[in-house]
Amino acid sequence: MKLLLLACDLVITAVYGLLCFRLFPASLDSIIIILLFFLAARVVALSIHDAFSVLNLLLLYPLRHFQPSLLMLMYLLYTALYFFLFFREQKQQNLIAENTRLRIETQQARHTQNLQVRYENQLAINTQYKERQRIAQDIHDLLGHAITGSIFQLEAARRIMEQEPEEAGRMVASATDNLRAGMEQIRDVVHRMRAQMPDLHRQEMDLIVERFRRDSGITTHYQLQGEAEHITGDMWAVLHSNLAEALSNVLRHAQATQVDISLQVLPGFVRLLVQDNGCGAATLSEGMGISGMRARAGALGGSLIINGEKGMSVITLLPREGQET
Image (cartoon, rainbow, N blue to C red; front, side, top):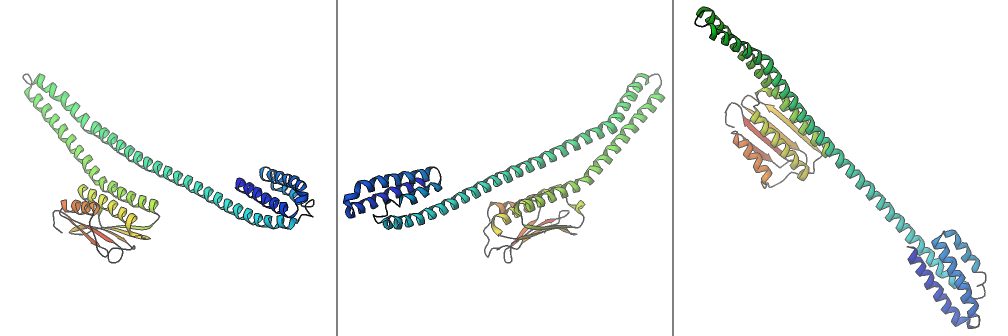
């Protein structure tokens, strides 16, 4: 900007000098000297501070006999140009500062999101590790003692089998009872583990919904109706994948402000509904995402129903206990 203004100063003084050459040829030497001082004052004002422009006003006095009004008129136009360039530069600087701020905030948000995903993944890994430790400890505590005691009894029975067959038979029977009791305890542990699995699957479903709510900012409602214990692990895998794909489509295509999600465990089947209030679609073209959802549901004997008349509605139906939908 300052180089442009300096160029304008050179043009204005040159034009004024040419006018004076035509109008006042006898005083041209004095006028040139004054204009050189005038131009030097402009250079100082542009390079140091605008306050030095006062020197230019003072130099107008020596030019009072050489129609300084022409010079003043040109500088009025110069002043208008100056303010135009000044405010444009300020606007550009504000835009640059705003863009920089937005870029930094975007990077920070992306970094925070990455940290959140890493934290959630690490939390899931830690949960699995703790669960494996607990299973190993249960097996060691329950079955390990039973097997160890039974081995000792069987070894002792083998040694005395010829001399004391009745005592050896009693020890074999005792070892058999210990092993049987250990197996019953293991069955109880496995049964309790299976009873806890629906809670883990429900937590994963909640996590998918919460991630979508957090990352999209879209109002999201989710409800579970019925007994989730009747949903098998294979069914949960399909429900999780189809829910994630449906929410991804909402984020990319729907332009929605609200999403309603319901998971119903009904007598004959399990029904997952994802309904948004977005633009919908008069005609549907199945891409890889929808085809994958339909294939996953079909692998368990289920089906996929899509309706785009009022927003977009995606329903996954999975039969219970081998019943076809």
